[in-house]
Amino acid sequence: MAGRVENPDGTTTLWRPVGPAELDLIAQSGYAAFPPRLPDQPIFYPVLNEAYAARIATEWNVDASGSGHVTRFRVTTGFARRYPSRQAGGRQIAELWIPAEDLPELNAHIVGPIEVVSSF
Image 1 (cartoon, rainbow, N blue to C red):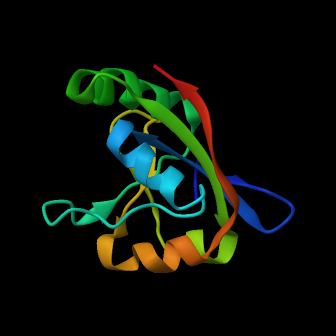
Image 2 (cartoon, one colour):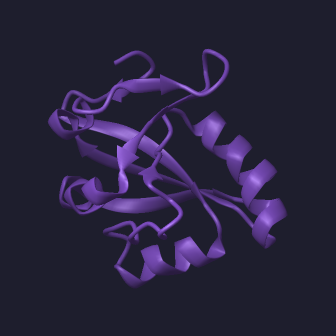
């Protein structure tokens, strides 16, 4: 569970870098759910800190689609603990790997709205 932000209210805070198309789909859900993964995307990977999400949004999403956004959301800690923290590089570069087929369940465990915290 290293690197996680587990809150006293029983939620875990996660971040997700997204491009404009994914952000549009999130908006269409009323900022309540992430869209299904594409066939070539078998994993949904929220990240464990805002700085890493911003790095992905600026280095990947901006290059790929012209803009990038960092979303922040909370899920029930019990759900988040089902997935181990994965190091994707350095110590501060950590994420959860949630199989695409588990995304509807993740969406059911989101507490409150998905928030856009920065845009590039």
